[in-house]
Length: 118
Image (cartoon, rainbow, N blue to C red; front, side, top):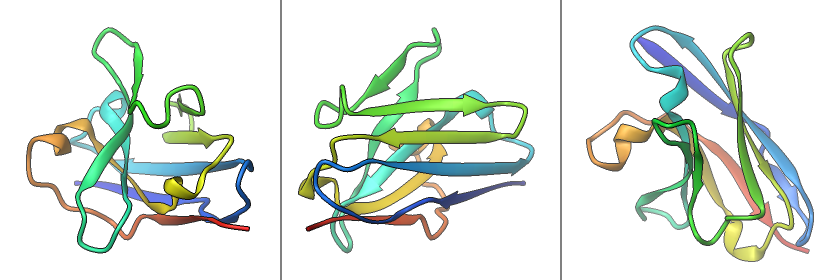
């Protein structure tokens, strides 16, 4: 059983930065497949924001490419999402989970909320 806990969200001004953290524990999930998703509205879909492809290349949604960076610390079992030059449309609840959750039903934690507002 794997447990993923997101943290680091909060209120950020437009143009600001924040780093989200995903702490992974347990077994059964490939650490390198842990990705970041976001849900921008209540009841809306959780969309993939950042992931690492099987060849090791980081991939991003078009809307965040160049502003967000995913990184991993295998010694601490943490996956990070550095978010720069934040915009209002980045306001969302951010979740970490396997990239397989793009295609298959998954269990989700509470996520961490990011609000971009002046």
